[in-house]
Structure formats: structure tokens, C-alpha cells
Picture 1 (tube, rainbow, N blue to C red):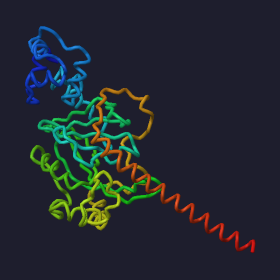
Picture 2 (cartoon, rainbow, N blue to C red; picture 1 turned 30 degrees about the vertical axis):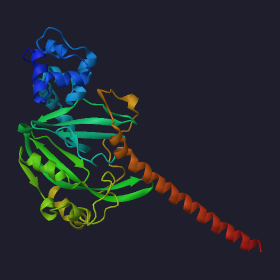
Picture 3 (spheres, rainbow, N blue to C red; picture 1 turned 45 degrees about the vertical axis):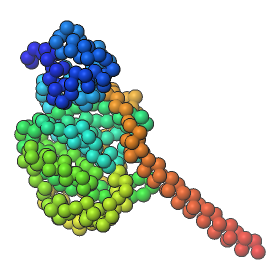
Length: 328
């Protein structure tokens, strides 16, 4: 590994993010002179400052100070993902695609996939009430290492609050130049066509079933009515869901797709407590993120609980009526 000038690297990553010394100093709560001192090598940032830089740039501390070497080291761990299928929330240049985090409340474990100008970054997250906890070192894959990205569809029977939902998701099959292949599952959002177009400009890309040729606008994609809360699409039956249901058996045979599975769409094989994992980064959730991720789930659970309560009351009334008729 080549020797690293940390000051040069700090300046490089700041400029990559189009940030001035004054802007960065304001975000960190330090003086502009401190930033200048770090970049000229006169002093070094302390560990707390490095952690804040990691949060601001949305990369690991290693990558803050080591740059592309850290990305290459992360890429070498790609074999750990070989042959796997991973549900992911989605970011495009650090901005979340609204609705892509839909499994967070029933399943606090989720993978995150961020597409930027140079690479795709994948990391494992655990959602707590106030934080998005990064519990793996990121896998950084330069676009030059991607041989093909193929958009497929996977079918899932998702169990949630005692109800089974037949649901189809986007399945982006990534094949690397090394031969490693893995599948990234995404919530089926019309907005994802922007992500796929972004990928298509950087790597060989195939929309295998011509989904975004079949559905040219948001209304037709969702079957006539655009959902108010896109984190919770299980009730959508028309549009893409109906199209996938009609063709899925044919698609499965053509492209070696997984059969329908019963259970949560899981991000991890085992669901241990957060204390069982090393937390590499803690990213605070904004009030808007909390509302988007958890608000709809609370309303959904309340509705289910009210329906169950109503059912119990009806049954109790029927039993009481039968009992009274027997007494008479």
C-alpha cells in the first residue's frame, strides 16, 4: 500500500464533496483554521472529528483517511456476498429514495445501497428508535468492476401483523468481473427508474422485462392511484404488481429466480440484538425520517389491533346471545 498523506486526503475528500473549508468547519463546529491545519499536516483531527467527518461524507473512517485504498480493501470482501440475496434501502448520491426503507419497523435489520458517481456502496444497518446504526464495514464496488447489472423481479409472501401479502419486488442482479454474483432486492417504486437510468449510464444494464417501457408514468405503475405512503405498498394490487403476477412463472423459468418464500423479507439470516454487533457508525434519524419510517407502521398496527378487538367483541356478543337463548 502506498504511503498516505492524511492532510492531502482530507483536502481531497472535502473537494470531492464540493465543500469549502468554511462550510466544513461550520458542520463540524470547529474553526476554519483547524481545517486548514489538518489539511496542511500541521495537526491531525481527533477521533471525534474523524467520526463526524465519516458521518458528513457517509463513508467509513478508513476511507476518510485512506481514500481509494480503503475502497479496494472493501471490494476484496465481495466474496462474502457471493450468491446471496439482500433487501436494501436505496440512496442516490447520499439522498434516500422515499419509500425504500419499508421493512425497517417489522425488521430492524436492513442493508443500505448508495449509488454515487464512482461506485456502489453497500452496508448493513440496524434501525433503533433514534438512529440508523451501521453494523458492517461498507462494501465499496467501483463501477469498473461491475460486468452487468440486470433488473429482475422476485416474488415474496410477506408475513406482517398476522396477514400474508403476496408481493413482487425489484431484484437487481449484480455480476462482477471476478464472476461474483449477488442480488439486491428493492421496494418496487416508480422512482427507482431514476436509479436504474443512473446505473445504466455507468455500467452495462438490462431491464430484462421492459418494466419501465410497459409503465411510462407513476399512475399506471401503481395501478391508477399513487399511494400516499410509499413505504407501505402491500395493498397495491394493480399496475406493476398485476403485471408481475401474470408473468412471474414465465420469468422464473427464464432467469433462475427464487421461488416464493413465506416470511419477512429478511436482510439477515439471524436477528440478534443490536448489542451483539459492532456499531461502526450511528447516524441520527431526522424527525421526517422517523415519521416516514415508523408513522405508517404505527397506523397500520393500530388498524389491525382495532379489527382484532372488533372481532373479539362480535364473537363475545354472539356467544352471549347463544347463552341467553339456551337459558330461556
